[in-house]
Image (cartoon, rainbow, N blue to C red):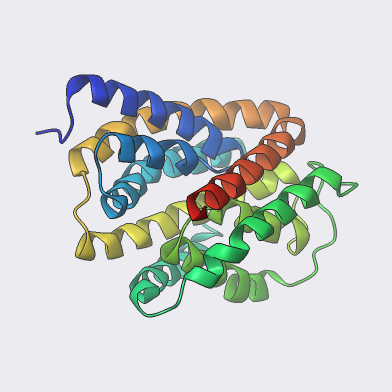
Length: 252
């Protein structure tokens, strides 16, 4: 029933746990799971599609854990999540039409810029600051932009959501992380719907990795709530730089 052997499955489960932990704190879990899926024998498209399956479980677990901790009201974010879902579908369907090479070229620069912003910007902590745009304008602009990008390419989507919440919505680091998880869940689901039409995901492997993601995401979200910005900021900086370096390596 599984698409891989038992020993390979154990490796994928371990990757799912670690990715779930990292994703729940700062995003970037795909840095771990996608390369491991490729090593396991998946084609690039199958790896991306399978990554969306297992990522759903981690994002959902993290969102629920943050909600139980009082850091996000999931019901109030339902509208934004719906926008992210459909924007991600649109982005995934546009991948055959839009030229994505120029996005891949500037993406490492953007990710390094995000890393520098969180590393050097003074006053970034867990306390909210003055917001620059209204919640409605945020939902109508930044959410569909990040959601469409998640469907179109995907790497760094969590970092872009985080940057938007902190710089424009005025959220503290921990609150921004909590709100990012629900939108990540929605855009992952949208991208998976589109991938299911054009790719052949490893459904059973993805579901098995999803169980490991649940454990990792729960542990990561709980630790992030205890440590706040002191844990999230450095990990976000590291994952953004690591993703930028990986994208540069892939291009070379």
